[in-house]
View 1 (cartoon, one colour):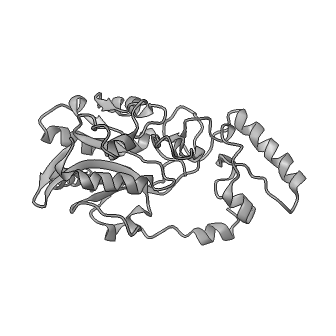
View 2 (view 1 turned 45 degrees about the horizontal axis):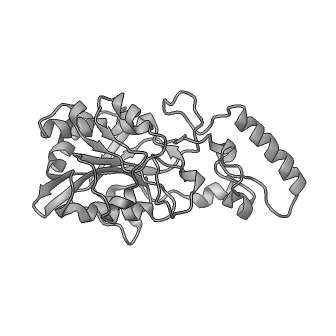
Length: 296
C-alpha cells in the first residue's frame, strides 16, 4: 500500500505502490508533539533537527516547513540501509520522523534499527531503562500485532479519526499501469476502485470487456482523475485511504510531552486525532471480509 517518503536498498525490487508521500494533515497531527519536544530541548521549532531516512519526492521538507520546522534532513542521495548496516552514520538529528514503505520488511527493519540505537547515533534520549531513540513513525495499523514488533516502554500512538489518503509521487495509476492488481486477479473486485494504481485485467471471464474498461479507467487517470480523499495536497493524485497510526516515543520527554498534549488537546473533539497510551487501547483490526462481500 502506498505510504510516505520512500527509498529502498538498491538491491530491493521497486514496488510502485510505495511511491507515495505522506499528506499534510498527517504532519499537522504530530506538529504539537514536535513543538513541545523542541521546547523541552530548549530550542525554537525551526531549530528542531528532524531526520526522515526514506526519500520519495522530497515533499516532507515543504510540508514540515509549512508547520514551522525548517531543519529537516531528507537526502535523495542517501540510502537508509547504508546507515542500518553501519557503512555510514546517520545525520545529526533530534528525532526521526518518517513513514517507511509498507511493502516487504521495511517497517520491521526500521523498528529494529530504532530499538538498537540506545547506545549509538543521534536523536536519542535517556529513560530509566537506558538510552532510547526518539521517533515518530507512521506505520500500518497491523504493525503492533506482528510477532517481531517491539517498542520502548512508554510508546504511545496517535490515531487519526479519518484514514489518511497518501499523495502519489509518480502519477498514481498513470505511472503504474503495468503492474497487475492482486485483488482484481483474485476476486474480480478491488477495494480501491478507480484510485487503484494497478491494472484491473486478468485471465478468464471477459478479457475483452476488461481490456475496454481498463482503457477507460486509464484515460480518466491520465485526464487528472483524483480520488480517495483530500488532505490539502493541491489536487494532486491521491490513493485510497489506508489504516495507519503514528508510533511515538520522545525519549526522556515522552511522558511530559504526552501529558502536555492531553492537557491542551485531549478534551477537544475536533483535532482529528486521539492519543492512545498502549496497544491495548488501539482499535480492533478492520473487518475486510465485509468489504469483500460487498465487492470492494
